[in-house]
Length: 248
Image (cartoon, rainbow, N blue to C red; front, side, top):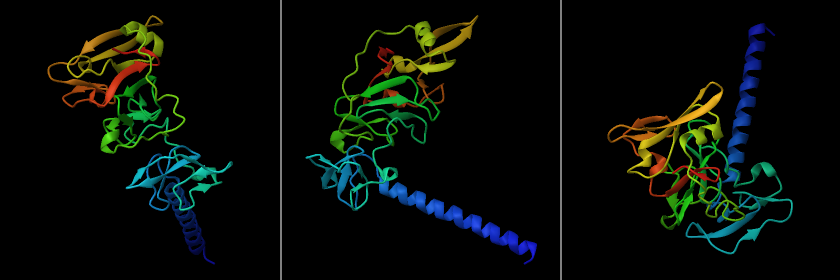
């Protein structure tokens, strides 16, 4: 066999392996499903990695059912499977593709600030709103059909978080020890126009509060001021905080 023929066979073999892996990845993704989303195959929605609810009119309804021990809830026709790679409800604590936020619970979230790692800045949705990973406004109205990305059950962070004390800029910067600009609050008329600038000087962290000019607002992802309303300042977001310390 000539060398060009061998190279062609090797290339075809590599392409075939890539295609098989891609098809397997797509298949696994289809089997997993998202939390609280009704599957067309089973007419059920996983509400945790091991629990599910049957659907009516494409909405999960009580009661909550549990998979047998050692199995996981999936989007397949046979709802419970022993293969852990197929389990649903594993999107919590993961930043979305736009790197804006990650859902931590049914009503709680963390800002991602343009990275794929959730930051220490967390927040909670307003009453009757839930965190959705694909929602550009973070929180959506549950009564209008918005589905929570994180499990509806066993959600320890869905309760109201204590506001704690309001942080001054320097205390905030010494807490996070990271240079840059960060959102300060979520009130459209006032704190949405403000941001904290953190910097290191003589081995100590300092912070200063700045204001966006005119009719502009601070954007957490780009760390710039522009005329768009930030996702943290929509009606569905109730507050922002650094752990349990409120940021306005």
